Length: 634
Image (cartoon, rainbow, N blue to C red):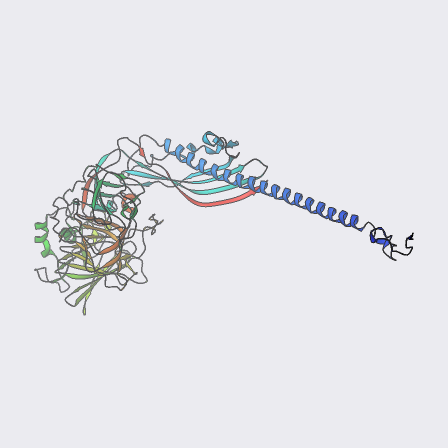
């Protein structure tokens, strides 16, 4: 039998083979543990950094949140204190006071504004519906008020107060914010209702006849009191009439509804202050309200005869027929008495006056040495072009350049010349007359000039954008026909700011009236930009005898297209007609309501009832912020 011996040299399976460590590998034992520990340390450091970063961000966010909360608390405190001060002043206006030109007893004293003590301690803003909002507080650390000189109006006083208020706000943290505000509070106090004889310059805009369906008002910004004895009509924005309607003062009308025109020229009557939506929206801005169902303004007979004013400076003693008869008292530059011939006429006197200074038109004033200019101005027989020019390097001398059929007559008046006596120089060709004195308003006792054109009057200044009316010059241009503006007619110094329409401090008496009771005011701009500005109060109205409104008189028209008409003064008209004008802006001359009796010389008047049912009728206060400063404290 065969026997097998196990082979002694057969290698063992690899899985059982013992391996002997090679040289140098013994030192690497445990490296994985070290790496793991390093990674763990790195992750720990990063996590700690993230925790610190997020904690810092949270702290910064909290600080900023409290910082902003304190700021808003301080600013809210200012608003609360300012409104409270206005309410306190309003509530303390006297119930009875002397009307202008009496004293300013209508204005409350600054002691009635007690917010400095009312809010001297910390006051929470978390009251009422704000109870669950972020915790905020404020306190007033300073409240100072001063009274400025009240401004008397026709039947009112305007009270002015300056204020300086400091508010400190805080939130949940220790952060605080200090905000200081300086400004002015204005309160207008009307007296009891009373009829007044007022010049039509009282209005920023007035239309006697505006029957429904006539057509919408040209859009633009219009300031000053506005009124119509019918109803206003407004339109939707339709190119090129895209300017918004903005009315800064009360707008009144006799009728109970307004006529709104949509983009398709459809009419819609409504008592609301707007109509429609989208492209058909008609939404004028009435900053001081729209007053419907108001009594009509009485068109009392004209208190002045403008023709007579040329002759005697008075304008209240003669009717039109008597004034026409007395034209023979006037002479031209050649000393020929008026006989109906075309030319420039004035009242030259060689007889010394009595002891009074009243301008009677037959003698020189007592303080003026003959030969003198008597009466109130100049009469131009026939149509003429009138150019107004302030004399260069002077604040008192005014020039009038009258052109008729190529004949130029230049008139220069200077009330400050001739040692204060005044001087009038009249030149045509090689002929010149120098007369003592200047035209004079016997009613107001002021140096004033009437230019009366018996026919169509074209008028303009020295050029586009240039002043035409001298500082303190008081002028009325009267036309017995159309008054056509062929270029800019501007005040040398505007009496109000544009477009804010606030009185310029210390402004003088410069004033221009443009009046026709038989024609219309027409714009005919010859400049390439098709814009024109005519300052002054413009009246195309004959009180007591309204025209027929047949499209030819008593209104405002344009010859050719005008892009924008600007006016600093007011626009008063009997009728309203269509005019090729894209936009019209009126910045009311607020001297007409702020200064009792102030108006262009010999301007037509009306009877108007002003005031309210009570002795004292204060309006809501208005605020003007002048300075606002924010600073932090800890």
